[in-house]
Length: 485
Ligand SMILES: [Zn+2]
Image 1 (cartoon, helix red, strand yellow):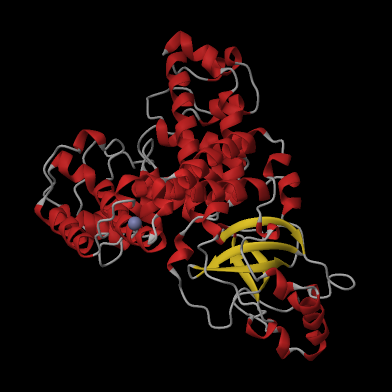
Image 2 (cartoon, rainbow, N blue to C red):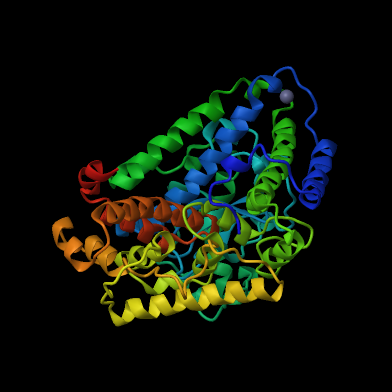
């Protein structure tokens, strides 16, 4: 339904309705176009692109870290962190080590933000040393700080610093945590017994810390201390983007913050247009008579909003190109994969990239059978929406998991991921060796896409599992692959 490879459609004409929706976004774009500027015209766009890349690398980094025991320790209690809430930058002190478990994990922190925070264009800037000078000032009086205990999604954490805030005695504030649910916030000054801690915090020179962003306590912790392989590559990439953003000429513009935020608004709308095009691209390919119905399915499934804005689900779907994006997106967002180990996940994902006849009936563990049933149930749900809206499904529509042989390589991939040699896994099936290699190679791409989806939804467990899954299947397959590719 959403084209896997949309590059081939790029030159094709858009359908009238789709054109209309894109036009609407484009007229928004014209309205907010950034004013011309001699300095920013040089490289503001590149600076902004690098800034966005740096920010998503930061999310990847945090997600990757909290999923590892060493990394998790860096999110230690009493550590000073910077976060964004409703897009407004603020500082806080971590209340406990690590993150909450679950689909969209949070960190628990004591907010040192302003009592009545307002948005500032600088909140859009990435957390980089050269940009800190532009940041909106933090409240400097304890009386101005909101001192709330908040649960902040990990994806909204801007930076973890090296600074640990000293309290008198053990972590007394931890007691506050008991009895609050996800949405509740407790104001420290509402709790008489915590007045002392508040005074202690004030005494701990918190207010002084907030005088200027230039002070060293706001420096990000030195992540290079973490020696894990995955982190090293990511840190290198993130550093390069940081250099690109900070070395740009536009940073010298006297209106840099204003121009950056104008560029950001422009970019948001451009992104929406790109995603809309992506979500709808295969309609062009087939020049479908049931265009409206397909849009209705996307809306019913929550991929796009009523006003044609691409929703979280749609953004996840845009990451998926190697497999059926509707079914796989549902599978990810229904948190089905949380119950499975990396080797099981990658085995189940093989159903998305394999559909060939095989006479061998794979032997699946009961747990894998459950996964198979769930995938079939989800694909039936998606198909039901399509039937309801009378979408015409062509014979090669890919989300048919019931009547097509799709689970034929689940056992093979499962055993491969668990370390069985290539010679032995070929005995498990009658599928050609070359096909097995191609499926495994393609699965690496699918794993990478699911990992990107995990970043978008902010799920460190899934992120880490996909990382592991990739490592499990990559095992000397390249050597085997060279014989078949
Ligand atoms: Zn400028």
